[in-house]
Image 1 (cartoon, rainbow, N blue to C red):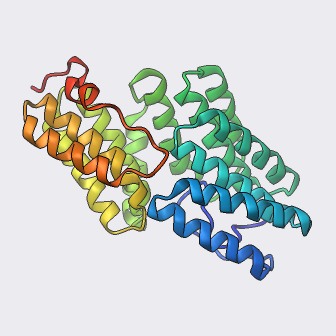
Image 2 (spheres, one colour):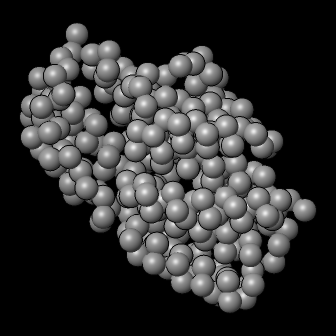
Length: 275
């Protein structure tokens, strides 16, 4: 029997939340709710510790689905912290558990984030292997979801996107669904590509668009890295005062545990100069 996500107070490895066909014990719900609030507020390290306690509780109660979801959540947090080796360990365990539970949707999304972990480390072979695993499962709306994942992998490995048309189709789909979190991800990705082409005005517009999406979601933890990108764009455009302003804002709101590039690294702009 295929399962769906257990509770909204857990980090899914995708956006959104569905109902549950499986009863949730109150103790498990408390762990998930507390950890999720910490996650959204940017206290990622505390969120990870609470999810680990939830995992132990679920294992002690022989609740295999909850334990698999907690593993996925811990992996997702380590992914956001750029601790990709640790993220991969938890996501791989989660993937294997979801496979045993015949939850192909959750298994696919765990595999997708495993692909992103390996892409971030520059391991193209592992990234493509896990993306193939993610693509092998069937799930609702997976065509657009996988298009976004594939574009992120492309960018990490080659600083290019192999099929921008698919990404645009995904953007239109998620705009219709009003999935602001995914739209922010797409906007940031498109901003990266525009900056690589020295189109700083377009990159700045897209990053501002992403920030506006975050204003309408609870995902405050994502603002810091986005502000750093906006700082870099302004330095590239020669707007040093604005670049410094955005970098200082990033320092103020970046979650604990996430290391930002130094001011010198951001202001150097990697040799890009705007058109």
